[in-house]
Amino acid sequence: MRLVTKVIRVDPHAPDPQMLARVGRALAEGELVAFPTETVYGLGANAFCPQAVARIFEVKGRPSDNPLIVHVASPDEAMQVAEPDCSGRWRELARRFWPGPLSLVLPARPELPRMVTAGLSTVAVRMPRHPVALGLIRAAGRPVAAPSANRSGSPSPSRAEHVLADLEGRVEWVLDGGPCPVGVESTVLDLTTDPPTLLRPGGVCLEALQQAIGPVAVHPAVRVVTEGNGLAGPHGRPSEEPPRSPGMKYRHYAPRAPLWVLEGSPQAVARAVVERLREMGGGCVGLFLTRETAALVEKQLGELGPHVHLFVAGERDRPETVARRLFEGLRALDAAQPRVILAEGLPERGMGLAVTNRLRRASGGKVVRCDELPARTGPHGP
Ligand code: TXA
Ligand code: MG
Image (cartoon, rainbow, N blue to C red; front, side, top):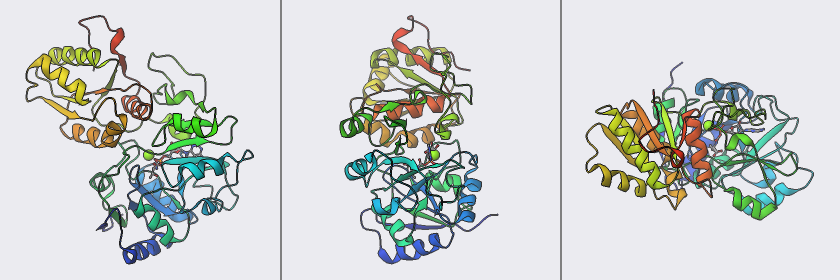
């Protein structure tokens, strides 16, 4: 069924309280509202309204075994959907990182509809810090289940235009608060294990978590990419661990064009890009590169040519700048309908871990270690 989607422009720093009250009421009554958070746009439904939650899965085309994150306006509100972990670490993490881009997996309270958790006995909760998100949840007066507001499998939306491209006519409301400042999703940390396990790297980096609570295990799927359920890694190595976060097992963030991740020093990545461009002749290619590597490529080639679409992603030594425009870049390159997209992976430090994780997943495992390539061979695309 097609609806008329109401699009409202909002001031991201100071949203109008009357508007929030009106849309918050609609959300509480079961309508779907896409709204900006500091990470990406979310598609919100009243977490205690099973019909609204069911519609989220339907409009996203999301598999029903992939649970939703519940968004709350305070740590106390988190306890409406979750139980504290035995160690009490959640309090410390909430104190340090909430409001902010950290989702904590805790035991779920029995009252929470199981559709939200996809049948799991745990629930992921987070308190976002974006004024529109927080204001909306407060206005709704109850916890809000919200996955990223994209069609399942496509790159997450970091701008309202991305939400409309995927969901216009399927949801009642889109609050347009401009670009999301972090650009990749929240970090998902499972507090039901000891030590806690990083299930998805995101807006709060691993190093910051370790500093706050000590050891954190990293689920193998964070670094080793899965193709379908085959769990083939960057080297084609299978991983033995089953996916703990159901979202891990799906190909994600993927543009339509096949995407290759090129990892290594800027020099090695630039060399691999240049060789691949020469091999491809006049074929249309999308490049997602940091400023530094793009400059090296341009220096070697002189001119890129009309068939090469370059998206300069940010600075290599400031991975947060790459994160901010990651999904925007993937969507923009895809719009040029290239035969292939070559994307530069980053060292897996700080926000580089989240960026490289998203790129590897968008590639479905097509990762090239450029430092290890013999000279004169590039990635072998389709
Ligand atoms: O930044 C974000 O987290 C954004 C904004 C809107 O807040 N939301 C988001 O939601 O990215 P979504 O649904 O696209 O991703 C949720 C991830 C999935 O990988 C899912 O498998 C995992 O969180 N997840 C949710 N509940 C879980 C649970 N109980 N146990 C393990 N993983 C869980
Ligand atoms: Mg998502």
